[in-house]
Amino acid sequence: MNLVLLGPPGGGKGTQAKRLLEKFGLVQLSTGDMLRAAVASGSPIGKKAKAVMDAGQLVSDDIVIAIIDERLDQPDTKNGVIFDGFPRTVAQAEALDAMLVRKGRKLDHAIEVRVPDQLLIERITGRFSCAKCGAGYHDKFQKPKVAGVCDSCGSKEFIRRADDNAETVTKRLDAYHAQTAPLLPYYEKKGILNVVDGTQEIGQVTRALEAILSA
Ligand code: AP5
Ligand code: MG
Image (cartoon, rainbow, N blue to C red; front, side, top):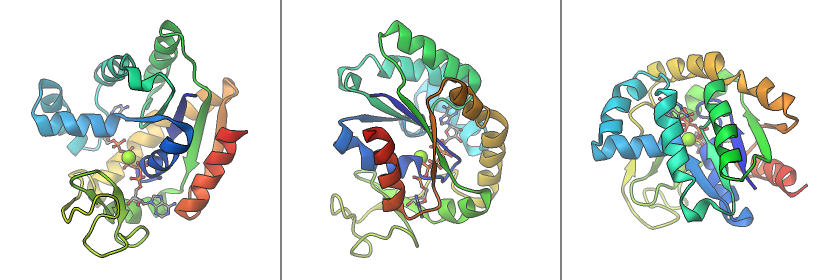
């Protein structure tokens, strides 16, 4: 099973992808995580992407399409993937369709995690994650069980993303509405779009997603 999680910055795509992986035997492919890894490693792609990401704009289609194309050739993706933050433009969606045909696979679901803009700034500015294992948290909505200690791996080191500030978030939201929202009618026409209410508690959103994937 292959699915695309669509939704605005801070909508909960990454949070939900991680909660679905095990139950459905899927792999999370987050272009945002892959690009942040490229920036951290100082690779040529990372150098190109850094300024664009810091400005809250979209990295070029060619770069992210090539990253996904290569990643899908790795054997751990064969059982199915959750695309998190990809595709983000109609050109990327078309490239994904062509790529999946070429690789003998198909997209089963596109699910919009719908959250209104006014909730997103608080979600994003309160976000942090474990520096060691990447588990995601929030100052208010998803605190570690023991303050200052990662639930998953016990690490005491946490990080915040460079683009998680109110000014950049506004730019990311503009990019979402202008460039990514057109994917909703794109997938609706294909008959594979579902919408879940992303304003519910994290566990309730997971249950809504599980219901769609299990149907
Ligand atoms: P990316 O990393 O994809 O960022 P994004 O789309 O802006 O999405 P976020 O990761 O911010 O949000 P999320 O939906 O994953 O929310 P999360 O689950 O963390 O992309 C970053 C940049 O990379 C882009 O701006 C662009 O420059 C570039 N890029 C990436 N992909 C690209 C592509 N395909 N093409 C071109 N450029 C690309 O949740 C947020 C917080 O809220 C967390 O703290 C969480 O604990 C909390 N939370 C989650 N759900 C709930 C809930 N239901 N209730 C309360 N709190 C919640
Ligand atoms: Mg994310």
